[in-house]
Image (cartoon, rainbow, N blue to C red):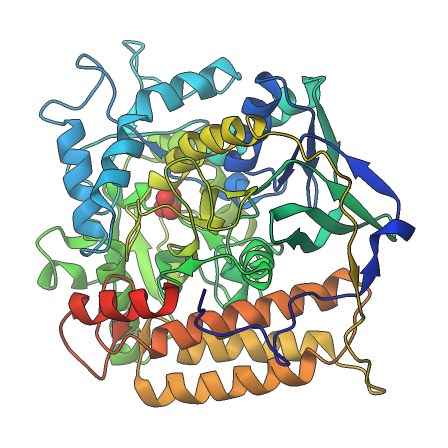
Amino acid sequence: MEHLVSPGPACPGHLIGCDTRRLPRWHHDVIVIGAGVAGACAALSAAEAGADVLLLVKDSLDESNTAYAQGGIASVLGDSLRDPGDSLQQHVCDTLEAGAGLCDPDAVRDILTGAPAAIDLLMTHGCRFDCKQDGHPALTREGGHRHRRVLHGHGDGTGRAIIAALSAALRAHPGITILEQAFVIDLLGDDDGIHGALLQHDGQTMVATAAATVLATGGCGRVWRETTNPRGATGDGLALAYRAGARVTDLEFMQFHPTTLYVAGRARLLITEAMRGEGAHLVNNAGERFLLAIHPDGELAPRDIVSTAIIREIQRQDFPHVWLDASHLDPGFLASRFPTIDQACRSIGIDFSQDWIPVHPSAHYHCGGVQVDSHGQTSLPRLLACGEVAASGLHGANRLASNSLLEGVVLGQRAGLTAAGLRPVTQLCHFRRPDPPPIPESLDVSDLTAALRALMWQAVGIERDGIHLARACRSLDFWLRHQARDRFDHRGGWELHNALLVGRLVAHAAHHRPHSCGTHLRRDSDGPAQDWHLGWFRDQNG
Ligand code: SIN
């Protein structure tokens, strides 16, 4: 199988050497890596199907990208519960339209059809969604949705509410062993597929083997300087799968969220699109709603359009951000509907019922990833993937807001069931791999991490062009080749390596697509060229 960037001297197939005979070993039926909504649903469904599951979590159970999701989960519910005029078909149309022609229509229909069952499953695990006074779910609207169809919990704390319920279910399940603070270094595989992973836990390197391994490691937003993503989102799963030889696709499509709380020196915080859905306006320094002149849906246009318009307004006004104005909305409603944002704004002296919120776009969600089928099966036997690390065909070139939690539940559950059904390996596999060559000097990890994030933001950010992409590819090739020669024994070094590899894959993919499409905006060329892309995609993936 051919790849965009072949593993080679600049990109070894593994990060550290090992002889698994000499290492402590765990054996389970199924390994799940990552405990966001997709990983949690995969682990729970595999365990409920009778599998003995090892759940490997890089940080703690409550720390995943899912936990930071605010907006909600898109779902067209039964007739009496949905927005009048809404339908599954309308949700499909909105998803296909956002995806800019690169969605897989079968995958879209299949996954969106699973929405009511996905909501039921979450409720079975204890998740609760906000309701109106009549007891029916309160639905909100986000960019690209023609109807109110987004369920939310705890106001803007949807992700935290889901993770709290799923974590309790995971901890209570006797068939699931949870290992927190466990960093997966490499997947272990041979011609028969993937047999497990090499990991570090408590300072010790160990091996975990299983009949099936499910990647649910989330995204890679931390590869960009400006991002809504938490510290752990360094693209580890994509790098693991790529090094192991899995097919990857649509990597250039990083979605930039239009509104992140932007105060220099402070951590960035997502300001949910649902605020615009409830009537907040984006304004420039003069208080003008600049989106109205750009798209008929104004602030609720698809995300790529809103993000690009903001960046252009920032350049035009020569000011570091624009503003979100909610001061015309009812203060009581704002505080109860958006408690997370209320608290964050108050902590820096902003009262969003009176003051404008400073906002800026930032890297948010990776639409591409490890290619999977409708059951989460990757191109490698015994390796499954679900959630943001996977590319199922639902998102195409641009994800419709709040479709990702839904996809995490639907594909997470299916991946877990598929994994639980795989026949066990009868022989115990052993792996011996030589160490990559050491070099005497040591690398300044934080300096190179900062340089990588700045380069990705400047050259592989919202607006791109061939000259800067080509330069970025050269720098990334060079950095990876240089850095890959350093043999690390700690998480920071491995994360940097993964982030460099992901940055390089994304930059090369973006460079190879000369036309704008979805989230990929080429300022040096106009118009989509889907035919060209399809030809290129076939060449890369055989
Ligand atoms: C948001 O709340 O604006 C983010 C929702 C999403 O990214 O799906």
